[in-house]
Image 1 (tube, rainbow, N blue to C red):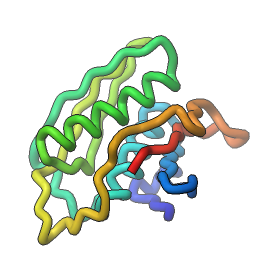
Image 2 (image 1 turned 30 degrees about the vertical axis):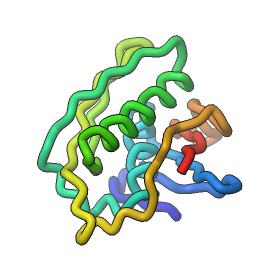
Image 3 (image 1 turned 90 degrees about the horizontal axis):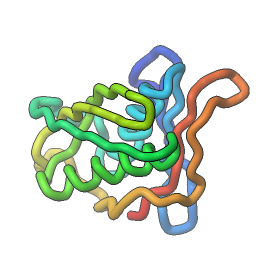
Length: 146
């Protein structure tokens, strides 16, 4: 499944991986690629278009490199989703070296409206990659445990 909500060359997609699910964000910037991958992760649970971005949640992460920071970013979102019983559909991300500060906007899960398919347990190091592709786009990808 692929989605191009942004319309600026940024998109997210899923890729198959045994019993789990791969998420990939592709965009002109690392910031946008991280946001697209977060949308891909949300789309495992429900359609991001059905999530109203009405409540803001601050997220901060720090790691020694981009790949570990990406896993920490996704796992921070999984934690916020689980503890707040929320789904997120919009993200604003800022990097300062290997520190990430973000705001995720979403709403409380409404089972009747969101029809959550699965619960995401966490991002893994399987198929983990953050970098530029041959076209110069940023790619952020990994497998999440569902």
